[in-house]
Length: 477
Image (cartoon, rainbow, N blue to C red; front, side, top):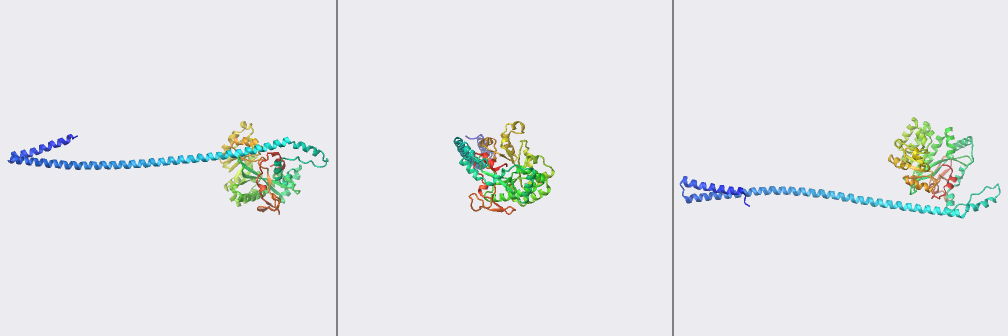
């Protein structure tokens, strides 16, 4: 459709050409034919000029439109590239989420498989005990015992095959814990002689992960031997040794042996750790503590795997000296554990600030319904609360499978007790599991005797289900 401006321009050009011809004809006196030719010539030039000018103007407009179209195309390409990048990122997140979900499914399947294995072991143990009860072994042993003379000691009734294997695994030295009662003076004399002659032994009791029951740590339990090689349990001599000022020397000797044991264990497993008990008197005595601190400073590289254990009462009654000593050990990278817990009134933030990374709570205390009303937190939430501050909860004194099942509901990650293994001594040199030549590395303990860490003395036996047998053999821990 022709635009109005074009028509107007054409009319103007005709009028200009006609006016030029009329002026030439009337003013210049040129004839009409010549005036018409001049007018047509002028009209032609005007038409050509208008056409050329319009063509140039159209070309400029088309160029600007093409430039605009190019810019729009470039913007569209950038937007398409951005959408492609976002789509690739979304696909990557979806792929990683699918991979994570697959890993979780595999982990859950593994846990279910391990639980199934534990259930099978529990069923086999229960079946073995049922067979033992039905056979009436204990009743059959009574007539044989009654036929013996009065002066002959009565023998123990026979055990099931599984329990007998566990009993053979316990060294004969453990039976020395069942010593007759002694007076405080006799115990003090025995402690002095044991310290002077370095008759200080350590027993190892494993701490296992739950529910896998893999050994993760060991607790060093102290025993003293008198001149007759009878063992004194820690509960029997600690109070007397503290009153006599001998506990510092005992702790220093135990630290030395624990470091030696830890070095042997880390040869086989870099993730293992050892818990070493330290008395409050040692922490409060500057002279004794200085000796222990110098020794620990020399073994600072083992700090991540060497845990110092204190009683709950010790942490609740810290004085300025004890606080300073604890801070010095924490600055050197050593971690602390709390045992002998009597209640669940725990301040995890304060303990974490002091360097505590483990808390041992008896299983009976965690499962006691009375703790719901007297403690600041429900026992089932204690593990989660401690975990927020980097503290692991360890349930100790576990003696039955039922307790393990209940503790799993409380999200307890570590367990310790006679159900898994009793405290077992380091075997003397020359005594191996098979009765043959000594095995593994040996270390002199300062008294002319040496000990060797063979596997039966360290690795816990399988749970036999007879916790009372192991408790009678190993004595108090």
